[in-house]
Amino acid sequence: MSTFSAPAAAASCAALSQQAQSTAFAIDALLLHNNTPDAPASQRLAFLSTKLQQFHQHAEQLGDCLAASPSIASDKLQTVLARALPECKKASTIVTDQVKRVSAADLPVQAVDLAAVSAYEELLVAFSRVFIFATQILAIEERAELESYLEHDDGQQLLAKADSAYQGVVSSAGLLLEVN
Image 1 (tube, one colour):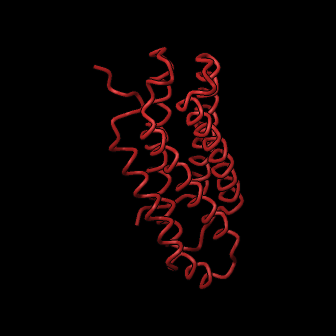
Image 2 (cartoon, rainbow, N blue to C red):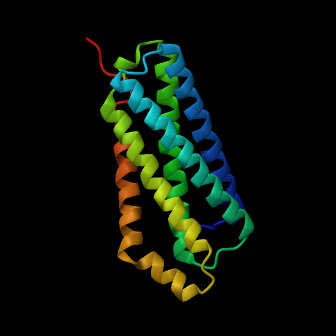
C-alpha cells in the first residue's frame, strides 16, 4: 500500500471543493449570458450547478475532518480515500473543462448534451455520498466498528456507484452535442 497522508488528502478535498464551486459559478455565468431559463438544457445546467455547490460542501466537510484527524487508523479507509480522491479529481477536471469549453464556444445551451449533464450529476451525487460516508466513518473511534462499516454492503455499493459514475464521465464524449 502506498503511503497515505491525511493532510495531503485534506488538501485534495479543499482543491476539489474550490474547483466545484468555481465550476458552479461558471455555469451560473453561462446561464446568465444565454438568458434562456425555460430551456430544458438551462434547467438541467442549473441543477448541475446546484449539485456542484452541494459537492463543494461535502468535499469541504471531508477535508475539514481529515485536517482534524492527522492520522487515520483504518487501512481500509486510507485505501478508499487514496483511490476515490484521484478519481474524483480526474472526473471533476473533465466536468470543469467541458463547462469551460461550452462557455468559450459561445453556443446556445441547446447545444449541451443532456446525457452528459446526467452523467456529471451522477458523478457528483455518487462522490458526495462517498465523502459523506467517509466523514461519518472518521467520527467513529472504535476501529472494529469502523472496519465493519467499510465492509458492509451499503459501503461497498456506494463505492461501486462512484466507480461506475467515474467510468461514465471519463468515457463520455463531452458536453457539447455533435453538430453536423
